[in-house]
Structure formats: C-alpha cells, structure tokens
Amino acid sequence: MTRRDFGLAAGAAAAALSLGGPASAEGQVAGGGQVARGGQVIGEGLVTADITWTSDDPHLSGNFASIGPEIEARDLPVIFGRIPPELSGAYMRNGPNPLFKPLSYFYPMDGDGMIHAVYLDNGKARYRNRFVATASLAVEKRANQAVYGSFAHPVPVDPTLLRPGDNPGPFKNGAFINILQHGGHLLALNEATTCYEMTMELDTIGEWTAGTGAPISLGAHNRKHPRTGSLFALAYTWRNPVVQFHEIDASAKLVRSFSLTMSEPTMIHDFILTERYIVLVAGPVVFDVQAAQSGQSMLQWRPSMGTRIAVVPLDGGDPVWLQADPFFVFHFANGFERGGDIVIDYVRHHDFGGPAGTTPLHRLEIDLASRRIRDTALAALTVEFPRINEAREALRSRYVYVPTLSDSLRIPSPPSATFNTLLKVDTETGESARHDFGNHIVGEAVFVPRGGQGEDDGYLAIFSYDPVAQTSDFVLLDAARVDSEPVAVVRLPQRVPQGLHGNWIPRS
Image (cartoon, rainbow, N blue to C red; front, side):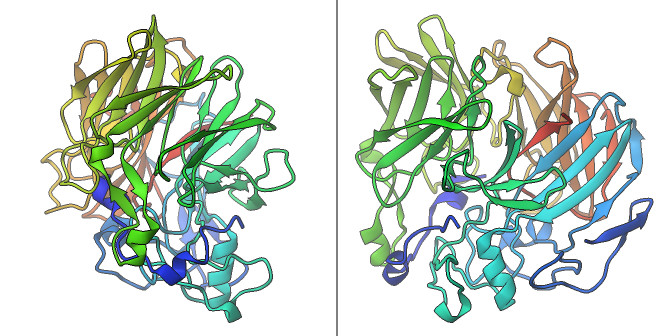
C-alpha cells in the first residue's frame, strides 16, 4: 500500500467541505461448498447477485473489484494438507467493497465494508461474508445507486434521498478498514469515525457506544494493554488539530478520554502502545481546507515541518515531544520498552505520495533519557501490513510477518498493495524466511495461536487469489516454518477481493 494510494486526495470541493465529515451515523448454500444464488436484493435483505459494473480504476479492477453475493458455504474442500482439529474460531478480514459504482473512488479511503469469515471447528471450515450494514449504505440501497462522493471528490447528497437522521455527506462511513473483538464485542472499524458492532455471524447490530450514551469514534488500529486488557483507541479529525485517545476497559466500558494538541490537523492512521506509554508518530501530512477549496489536495505533505513524535505517559504525565526528519507511517508492527529505550518496528514511507517501492521495514529506537532517536532498516524491501503474534503486543517481540512482492508474480505492472510473498523477519538477527506463493496474490497475514508459549508457536492465516483460475483460497502456514509447505489450503466458494485488515476471533 503506497503513500500515493492513501494520501493524494485532490480536488475536494469547497461546497462539499461545508457539509461536514463522515456521519456517525440470506443467501444459502446447497452443500459441499456449492453456492445457490438468486436475484439481487436492493434495500433490505442480502445481496445475492454478482456485481456487473466495471471500472478502469486499478483498485476497482482485477482482484480489487467488488463482489456482490453474500453467501454461506459449509464443509469447504481442503485441497492441501489438513486443518488442525484443535483450532476453533474464525479468521475475519474486512475491506473496501463498493456495492454501487462509485461517483468517485480513492483507494483505500472509500468503499463499503465487507467482512469475509472462515470458521474453523473440528478440522472443518465454513465460509460466510456480509456487508457491514452502515447507515450510509442504507441510503444508497434505497436510492439503488451511489450517492456519496469520495474524499478526493466530495459530493453533497441530494436531500430528497435522505430521511431524518441520515448522513448528509459528502463522505461515507463505510466501516471497511478493520474488524476486531474486545470485551465480547465484535467491531468493524473505519478511519477515526464511529464503528459498527457485528455478531459472530456478521449481522450488523449498529453503531457502538462503549457503554456510553452515544456512538464513539475509534481509529482503524487500536491496541490492547498487556497487563490491564484495556483497549486504547485513537481518533482524529480534519476539522481541528486535536488527537483524542480513549481507554476502554476489558469489559468494553469507556473509562477515560484524553487529548493531545497538534500544530495543525494531522492524518494519523496508527499509533504505538507500550506498558507505560502511548507513542504518536505524526508525519507532516496535514489537512488543508483552503487548499481543497482551490482545487488542490486536502492532504498536504509539509516536509519542512519534519515528523513530530509524542511519548505520552499513561499515568497522566506530560508528553515528551521529539523531532525527526520527515517520514510517514501507516502501520506499526509493535512497540515495547527495553531498558530506557522504546523500540518500535514499523513500515517507513519516506514521503507522502512519492514513487512506489520505497516502504521498507524499519526499527525506531527512542532513548528517553537523552531524547535521541536511532532509526535503522530491518528489511530493505517493499513491504506493508506488518503483523506480529498479538499476545506480544506492547511487549518485547522478535518476529514480524509482512507481505512483499517478488518476480514470481506474472501480472504486468500490478497495482499497489499487490503482494505474493510472505516474509518472517527476525528483528534480532536481521534474517528472514519467506513463503513465495508464486503467481498468487496475497495480503496481510494474521497470527493464530497454537497454545504454546513460543512467540512463533502458531499459524498464519491468509487469503490467496489465483488470477488465472480466478479462485480464492484460505491458507494456513506454520509460523515457525514459514518457508515450509502450507499446513492447509482450503478452497473458498467465491472470489475474495483484496482487503485491508483482519483478526483471529477465537471461539469463547
């Protein structure tokens, strides 16, 4: 995922900006994995027909193209290996999947959330996928067309299409970036707006309140404290230069919120949590409404500002601010304390909107006593979507699992966020092992624990797409031996488009 895909939202209209930001606002299977489909249902009910619209946008084409059918399939065929019988739970992954052809589209900041889930139990697999039934999607289903614009080209919604309380636009909250579980609540996340609670069968319950009287805004990436079990969440807005943090306890109740003031409204997609600190890495990407009103990008890269790093004590102490040369981060692998240092593993974007192929895995070390920063490359390859064994989150970790692209993929000039190889990077030795999927496209890998104490004692769950056969598989790799043959390959009943983030949801 390159910086240009996230960031250069050109041509935002002044009239649209005046309307505000995002609002908070059964198909069956006959058996043996065969899908029974009917006609398309628009409005209430499931979508059961294929999407027929096409687009020249590379991130709406190929395996980035949306799918329509919401289906369920049981007893999926295992075409290689075997599913470990002790695994009981679901691998769920979210991603942008516009139901209607967008008026404009800016990957990966636009779309409707669609969650794909593979449920494992007693060595068998079941598949189910559902749209996240957001309030904005309900408006477009009633209209039977897209009515919201994108961040690149906001479009005020025709008020005759709206009911009282509907999102007036010009942006949509699609809840399409991530899916995670906390305190028994399954949450579909957007970018720093309200999130939607889902059931384990992917029915949408509604906007989540975290035990308060109103929907709460969460970021796309939120992190659990290793001792307290609290979820720390981030939210920001283009309207003002304030970043807000929430602490949501292990029972899923909001216990406190606190904020940090920036010099300008800043885009911050992810952050780091350690046992005693939050670390905010604010690259010089700022929201500029005046630039948007003049037809430029609302997201402006200001390298003269440098990158500001805030180390915020969880006990309420004053933040420590550090200054670094300009760089940008979308995704962190992990952060932890080691002696007097804070160690952070992350994917470094050297600028915002620059050429692809310059996103290596890095390690940032902050010496709090001297307030000095050291930054070194761990894997000098084009990577993104780094993950670890989540049991090590905010604790010392050694292994990072991250996809990259090799020349065994035979698609000419693939769009960004296209990968075919999974790396296991040993951050202590600098060595890496790889699983090359050849001419298959993969995305983020999620760690599935096996039950032992070793950091790599588990499996890696990942979706794989064959562009020739146009089939998708669910693949389990051995996390300790990434370069070995897969543990299991499960054929899925329909194509699974490229998505964003997911998690393993163990059965309670």
